[in-house]
Image (tube, rainbow, N blue to C red):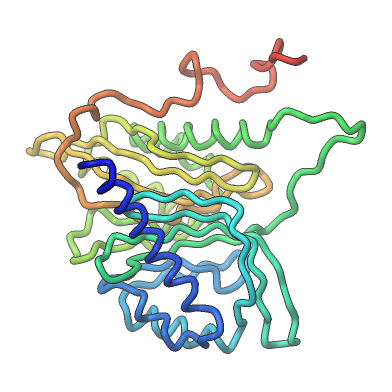
Length: 306
């Protein structure tokens, strides 16, 4: 692909996302379905900490029609944006006017928009921050980002457990009431299907089935953003389904992390399984050098500047 074609694919992805966002302001959601593709999947926080998982244009339309009874969007401030040819991820500070009480409320959210349909979005996956950020230490010095380092290690441990199918290692990383809404690669439904899992035990059961069916060999990180309250990651999974050649798929996911340092869920979608890329044999996107060095503050002794 020529460089201008690569850029054009990213610009089209952003254009679909921005058209959708604009459709939500001042329209009472009348035009919003014009920005949605044929087989949409959504995981949206209707209330803080409560995520609704829905699929299909009819149910998405009903969700938007119901939303105008609750709140009206007033403004967005996009702190971060990551864009590829098939998704746009944003860290947003939106303000909504809540109808009950006529009250303006400003929060922080992260949202993954899946843009791989010719006509519009095929997915939206959002999470709202539920607790206050860390504060600086009293003497005014700048602390090391220990919470972010913990979450980076946590995410790597999660991927390791998934790749090995090690549910005993997986479950302690998850909030007991976690929400798992990812593409279900055990389904062959047109447009894909979403898992709708609640609780660590349900996630572990699904992972065991997924691992047995796809036999993952390794995972590379294509994009990753780690903060003190979530991890966003685009991953390339190399798999060898039974009786088939090695293949790959790309998955983009928002992983919210609770105050106790456990994953509250996984919200996202993935591309179709495809032929292996020439460089996919090598695991890439490693965050710890030497490999295996964890985020333990003791490992940071002698950090430059100390």
